[in-house]
Image (cartoon, rainbow, N blue to C red; front, side):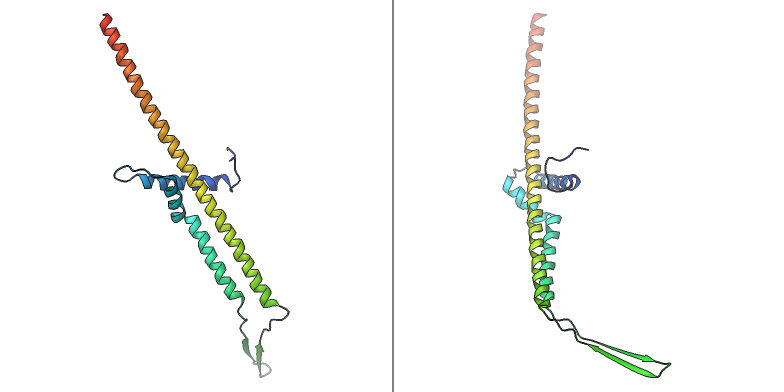
Length: 171
């Protein structure tokens, strides 16, 4: 197994993203007629349609909701019970009281978690852009190689025709 020369995560994860990005590029250029696609469009399409980025953005939404929930006061509880052997009825009421800054600490912790989630989203966005850029360069290189091979084949055909013409002229 070849080790990746970068540290954007596991090699398999990066290769899956690159395969997805190449598929996106092929889908974008594989319409009824071929059309050019530029670098900025590739990056924009990758960011708009990446499932990893969509999941990261959804986690941000969950984090924002968690900040609101962290500020809520806990609900009181009421419990009733009966004891048949002693003919007793019991009732219990519990009202949690947040003291010593517990509510503020919970809100601060939720905000910190949201900042971490936002940073992870930015990392995912960078990973997606990097994968799209890498796939774009790979596709561009493959197109240039194909063009060069096509031109080389045309040159070889002209050389073959010239050699055949000389052979025919010599006989």
